[in-house]
Image 1 (cartoon, rainbow, N blue to C red):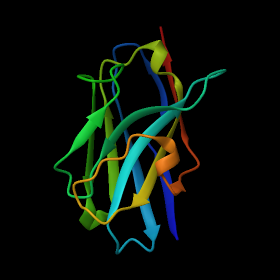
Image 2 (image 1 turned 90 degrees about the vertical axis):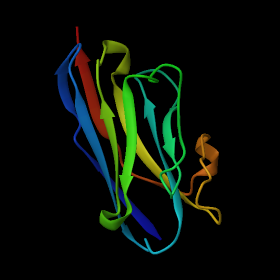
Image 3 (image 1 turned 180 degrees about the horizontal axis):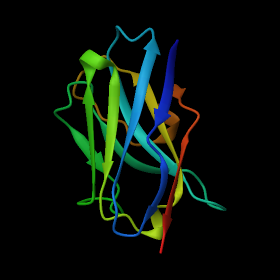
Image 4 (image 1 turned 30 degrees about the vertical axis):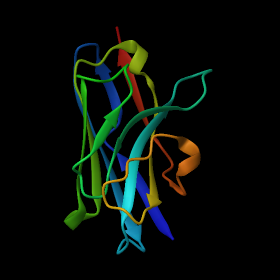
Length: 127
């Protein structure tokens, strides 16, 4: 089992920045692809960004491409999401997720592919 804990959410004005972290614990010795998803009020959970275990491959939704950057530090068992130029449409609960993979360069972009989820961290962007 892998446990995931998000942190770094908060209230920020439009145009501002936040950096989310996702700390993994438990059986972290394996090879895991990871990703970020979000759920806005009244909406379904949506994909935000994903990164391969090797960190060589990343993928972003069109809505955040060019503003958000996903990264990871396997030595610290932590994944990050740097969010710049935030706007009110980015307001949501952000979740990190992980899935065991056999190929280090695999990126997973669909929520159904993930086995482990964090509890989420709230991001609120005021206009």
